[in-house]
Amino acid sequence: MFLPTLFLITVISFGISRMAPGDPAELKAGVGSEGAQRGNQQLNEQIINQIRAQWHLDKPIWYWTIFSDEKNADGEIKPLSDRVTFRWNGTNNQYHLWMSDLFHGDFGVSFQDQRPVMDKIIERVPITAFLSITSLFLAFVIAIPIGIYSAAKSRENSKIDKTVSTTLFILYSLPSFWIATMLIIFFGGGDFLAWFPNNGLHGNDYPYPTWAANTGDLLWHLVLPIFCYTYASLAYLSRQMRGSMLEVIRQDYIRTARAKGLSEKMVVYKHALRNSLIPIVTIMGGILPSIVSGAIILETIFTIPGLGLLEWNALTSRDYPVILAVFTISAVLTLFGILLSDILYSVVDPRIAFTKKSA
Image (tube, rainbow, N blue to C red; front, side, top):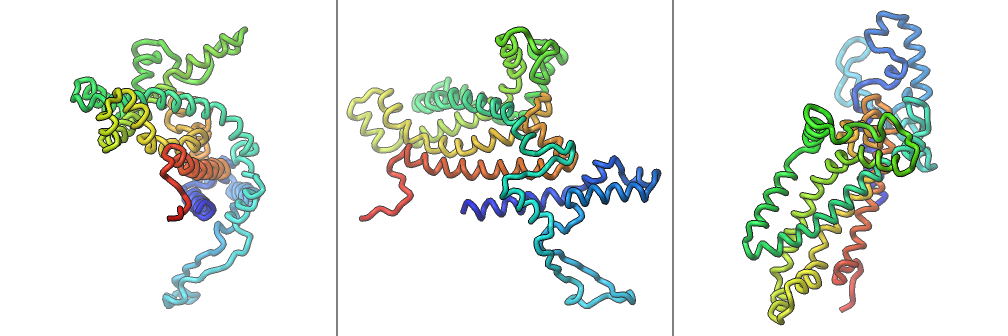
């Protein structure tokens, strides 16, 4: 199902990008409807037509074009059977030209600055990947022990478990853009404390004389963004881990292990933990696309020059090649992530197999 799914994703993403309002050729030419009326309309139309021809925007979008002519030359309404007609466009259409370049590893050039799209993506990937990997690492390292501890304490109906659960539910319910705004106001020099920088990756004096100073300045600028990246994932993962662990420790073989006199640590970490990791493995399948797709809202709020900000600028300027490149790469990585999760299932639980076993 990999290739059919990928094909449908390309069709849907290509169609949605073309349905967005606005004309990228007019944006590039700096001419709107009002500007065209005030200026030299004929010259403006020539420039726009040249840009459309250069970017293949003057060609049909799809292999088939639907025409619906409701009136004939005499002004009479045509019969229903004659109103809708289909015209075959062959390979001379926008989707086919884009897919042909895609199969050759060419995502085209950006409408904004005429740079190769792949160069722009490669330039932004390290920043977004570092943020995503760091936040996910912190989330997993903190969430799994919290989930295990909370599940173990739930048998005792302890106040610690209730406090942790309430705190995590509150964190999970708070939107990231609101948390980012509050952090800037309270700790980023907004209205109160100015402990952390609130935008960019470097200070005004960058570059500094030493490597340590440059690294420290970078990490200091990433404190608030990484916190915003991490807290929601942390809350979600810990709840998933707790729920899965609770389901496992109620199984018969766990009761048998306790009846044999094994210590609680041995029961939890040796017998219960491995089988309770399956939901976590499923969630890990979403790691690959998040490394590339980036967080549009957070990178925009903190002015981080990563893929999220690149996507936002491409969306606002109707930069079709950049939009489709990010969508396609994210789709491929999502499918690979799902495949990787399926493979890891059998590693975590050997009872899971993907081939038929003989009786």
